[in-house]
Image (cartoon, rainbow, N blue to C red):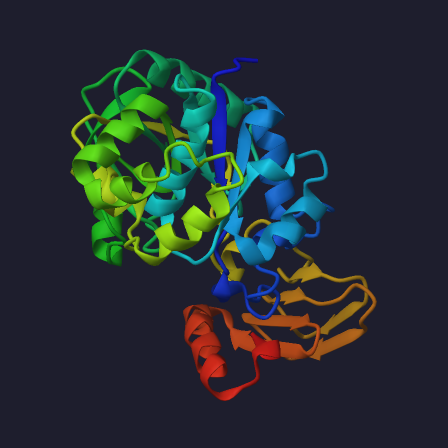
Length: 359
């Protein structure tokens, strides 16, 4: 295994669309949301260990999740858990981790991956990532992992690539944020678009050069900490640094403005598990197309539902079709599947009118 291979796993989000299971003090990356026996962050970490030495894997999360991360990833050194004092989107968290890695290995080749995605075809994922790491180690480029679309989904960003490139690694022509349905259909039919997975591969030198050019203000914030990373001075410096750092995504701040961007369009059994509906498609279904997580669920005249309840809770449902039913601790959610995008707004309303134990 190449000692220059590193990974930054981003694990700081709240996952409000998975409320009530995902809450501020225990978000979805720390939950066994599919009932597999492993949380999403454990699945991600174990997958990456097949590519990178475990001492080269860094988890970037909010400081309130440090203990939770240590409890779930028992073989990781606490120094590899990078704690942000506040959320500032993906570009600052990557810049922070870059500078920590640079102090260890300026020749690092880095994977950036979210902590809460599902990848069913792990062997193909490993093959693609090893190819990407080989490419970025030899070329000054920023590479993103695209997903071959199997439907016109309006929930994902799209990447257009140069179709005349015969290689698996193709030049990126354009990024498009979540399109409407008609445009998404055109993208899928064209054959030269893929979904944006939010996973990246690049050399440390290439990404730092991109930060210096395109996000100089963010880069300067963290450059001021040179000599303090991986020392006792790092904590105090970061508290100050984050208070003055802008919030910006790596897609908007770096990828969309760079010219040396490439994509691998892969078929790795991927889902970003962004909604309860996306979970439904990855769970076994009963004879009436109900996805059930829980040992004591009884369904009568009910179909096409997703039910996620504590394993020892007896739940009896009658006459429901196309609903999301979720119980977690002291909260019960019953919501039409077609209205699942409203869950995020529901959580926002709860934050205004209810006690924090409910969110």
